[in-house]
Amino acid sequence: MEENTVPYANRPEWADVTPIEQHENDQPLAPIHYTAEYKDATDYFRGIVETGEKSERVLELTQNIINMNPAHYSVWQYRYETLLALDSDLEAELQQMNQVAIDHLKTYQVWHHRRLLMTRIRKPVPELRFIASSFSTDGKNYHTWSYRQWLLAYFNEDELWKGELDFVDQMLNLDIRNNSAWHHRFFIVFESGIREGEANRERVLKRELMYLVFVSIQENNLLRDQQIRQAKYLSCTQQSLGVELPPRNSRIFKSSLF
Image 1 (tube, rainbow, N blue to C red):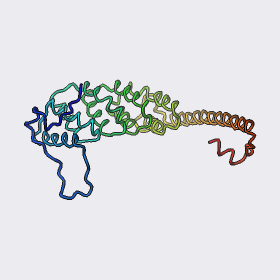
Image 2 (spheres, rainbow, N blue to C red):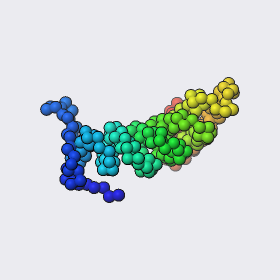
Image 3 (cartoon, rainbow, N blue to C red):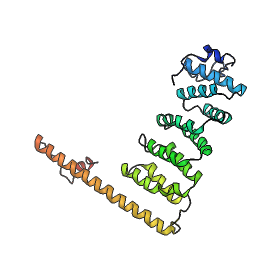
Image 4 (cartoon, rainbow, N blue to C red):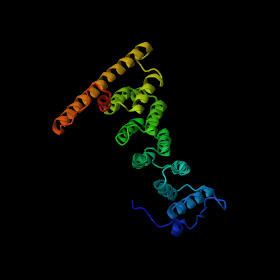
């Protein structure tokens, strides 16, 4: 849909709304220099909040403001309340906000809005898939992982938990240093209740310790391979340039490998 760039103050369909400017004293300590477009939209937002209007044009207005400032909590909340008042299609809203979430992964309000929608939609499986796809943009984002944990805990269905350890393995295979993935594994195993087949906590603890050993061995092998490749490169450089390198067991040589 093509965005309307005409100021709300110049739109005949908004003539019945009295815009309310943001309150500022005569000499604000740290004035914010809003763009004319943003100031116009938020003035009309305060106007419709004052009257309590919930309508399709309110959804258009809030969408416009979110596009300019996706961290505006009050706008998100009022949009959600308007969606409920209009009995809007919440699944369509969720789909519409997919790109907003991808573009603004680090904005808490984006994920909080999805959380509110999911309490009504109650279809967590597709949402888990969407979260997984968003990790291709940023695999460590705190808000995304927190939202995934909320989703799992809120619905708390065995089918949802069943594949989570495998999912964490996939994420760690992509980046063994993904601290968010490690935290999620701990959350699954030790902080989210006891799953079927995991009542023997001593056995679970031993399994996790063995997992750490296995991962450590893999990581050490990777580092060793990197060392070998770099040593070969340095050796070739030495031969081609006739440069004498420090002994391989020297501190300087070892520090250059990491």
